[in-house]
Amino acid sequence: MTALTANAAPGRWSNNRAARRFMRHRLALLGLTMIVFLCLACVLGPHLLPYDSLYIDLRARFAPPLTGHHFLGTDPLGRDLAARLLMAGRISLLVGFFAMVLSTLVGTMVGVIAGYRGGWIGATLMRTVDGFLSFPSIFLLLALAAALKPSPVMITVIIALTSWMEVARIVEAEVRSLREREFVLAGRMLGLSGTHIMFREILPNAMGPIIVASTLTVARAILMEAYISFLGYGIQPPLPSWGNMLNGAQQYLGSAPWLAIIPGAAITVAVTSFNFIGDGLRDALDVRDDHI
Image (cartoon, rainbow, N blue to C red; front, side, top):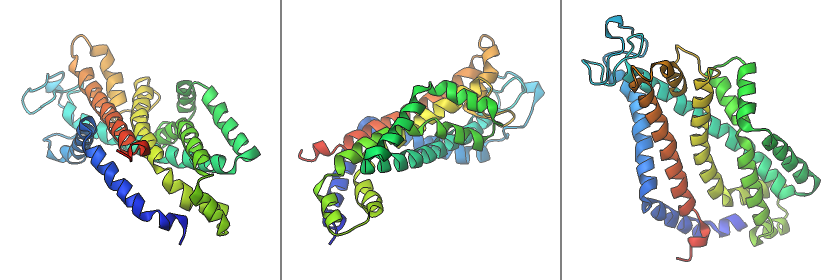
């Protein structure tokens, strides 16, 4: 019986307690509800609206919200703002999600190897992380976005390349605290390989901080996409994103403020909801509370 098998029953018990703690976290439940609603709206909403995101009605330019069939109004070209908001939500949420996946994979790989191996390997990897962190991430992000051809895939990769370092530091610290635990020592005595111990024994026990960090990374990635798109280096029109909708609205703040308020509110709701979920997961997965 391996250490992981021996700890399976306590792990299931701990998972059940974590789920109950999460369900008692009201803000986390609110955030989860809002994210589910946003995702469903972005996936299903465009099919339920009378206009698509590219339909132009010059007679309805700058229509305010709740005007005719335009629930959220129209933009300077007469395009339905609700349709563009939901299509933009697809792009922004997908960029945030896949940037989180890529950055979490890279950061976890680096953190696990550095934390378990230690020595010159760990020192080299973590000094590399420190080197990346020494550059202001927003300037590095803008430099990469300006140098490379902007597209949803490229923007996702760029955001992931500037986001994995924080995950690596969290994972490295967690793995260092776990590598001398009894189940790791038992695995070494059984002759298990270092790769097996790292990814089959230690990594499952470090998933709590990784899950919390990945949830917060989604919120950060959405903000970063909105930032670089607002500055004109991100997702390019006519493909909508919440960031480039804000970019197109800045010159109409006085005459048509809803053009900025609506996508700004969507960004705020999405980022706040992911942060609420991250807070709830952090409290639910905190093993220090298992004795309560």
